[in-house]
Image (tube, rainbow, N blue to C red; front, side, top):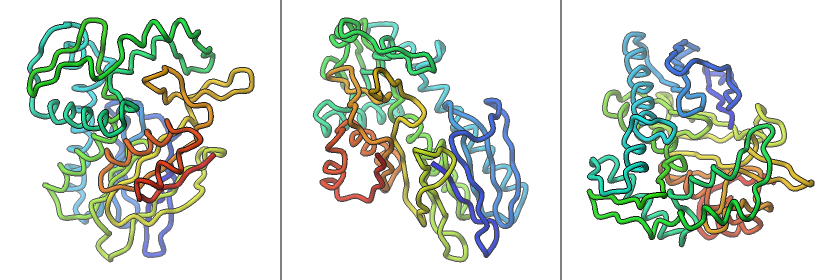
Length: 318
């Protein structure tokens, strides 16, 4: 997704995409462009951006720094790539663990998504990465490799009685499907409690706006062209609410003329090869938008029909 940020009353635009220049994980770059302060950093393997209307440089620096710290906190706490956090302890002990209130809310949400989707969204399906490798030289797994993992997938095999969680040995939970969107909403909530100034949070193209700009104008957000990454195919005027995009523009394997995207069906262990290239959904929160866009990708040829049934605004590219 590309973000087009107005810089003057004439709405000069700046393009932001997943291929933004690479910042080190803890580097924070804050610049001023017209009436906006723009903070950029990397987190959760994504370029992250805070666009903030603010007349005071000190306040702008403080708010953007708080946003970065919150994003890094969430990554540290919930990343499956670390061996020093709660998720690692849950996945490695095979026994009952008492979780904190924030983790409990995420688990409740994951459980609701599993029920709503009838098992299409399942945070225990992350172990499929052992069979799939979507790097430049990735290959297609065998059916046998997939079938060895399927018995270790299924939220219904988890025991969750808030605040007690038991993940059977050999199974894992993975918040990767909701983590970035959750971080967007969490940062929006944090900054909303600190300032009345208007701002937008954009993490890797998933964004949420606190409200219209001071003059009543919208934040201008462009949907990235899946055929020409870095270019926008459409511009959305966002005054409040969120957008999230799911797709396989950057993570896929092409084998024997067939494109295999990285969004995998937890029931079969395979992607739907008739899925769209990308889907962008508008919703009240980034987390909600992200779930719906991901579930739509899993519907393959029926993605648009699923989204129409949800009565939401969306943009689908094939």
